[in-house]
Image (cartoon, rainbow, N blue to C red; front, side, top):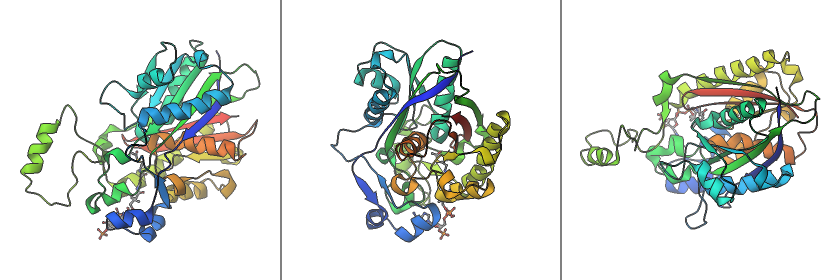
Length: 342
Ligand code: ACO
């Protein structure tokens, strides 16, 4: 059986920076509330006319990852694209990237696992490499959240959290027999909580005309959540996140006969700085062992781990032999971890 390793990383975020102060001008919120609860200072939003979309940002990040991997784009044999905010209802963003990058007619597969999306996508790619089916796979996480947020006070508990951006990785067959690469991935889901963090419509169960009729006949609390904006039961998600993050990190460590002391760098999904700090304390990790950049980008869902991983690499946190642990929790609920020896 073969093993896989990450040979190239890239990221792209839109130029338009939206600070907490900017949000305070359009909804009833404050820099103090947002920073205290989440650690977020600013995020990037696509600006109308800047030419970006989920697929386009993904393609921009992919170009950098391909170049850094030192391969030709023709070497890519599969695209795995993770997002909860695709450009179209169908087809998925994977085929758009195939076209945007003018890649040969390789297969493209979209993953719908929200904040755990990148680790799920990485796991899928890892299996294809392990079986020997493919040698180089492009894995992308990208989100255009700002295209679908309720930017009024009604939506503030969700809207202040999310930002736009993309990250990409090239996963390649490991040619060195030095026990490096993706050591394990662990995936979980619990659909009983599907509606606790969801965007219900428009969907085939709740089509646009039905939503419009409901809006017109609105005889309900104007503060109540609306189906075509994301809804989150924040406190329930928070409680589940801290428990599941810990479990799935432990699962990865145990599977590799490692302990928390072996973690050189934890790159958690950037959902909330308070969650990352809780996990850091639980595993007794020092500040330099946990990479956070939510302060700059907010929660970019499927893009958050590859963006953070790219920055960690660029800033010198990751070198040959570094044990990197990725962990995520989010809508589904879904949660996942990956243990990688660089
Ligand atoms: N600005 C000011 N006040 C606000 C805002 C805001 N942006 N949002 C909510 N409030 C108010 C609420 O109305 C509430 O007021 P009230 O007490 O008068 O009713 C008060 O602040 C407290 O609101 P809570 O929702 O209870 O705040 P909480 O402390 O739970 O923090 C948060 C909210 C930050 C969302 C937190 O619950 C959280 O981080 N949850 C987990 C997020 C997460 O991990 N998501 C998973 C990934 S996302 C994905 O998969 C797509």
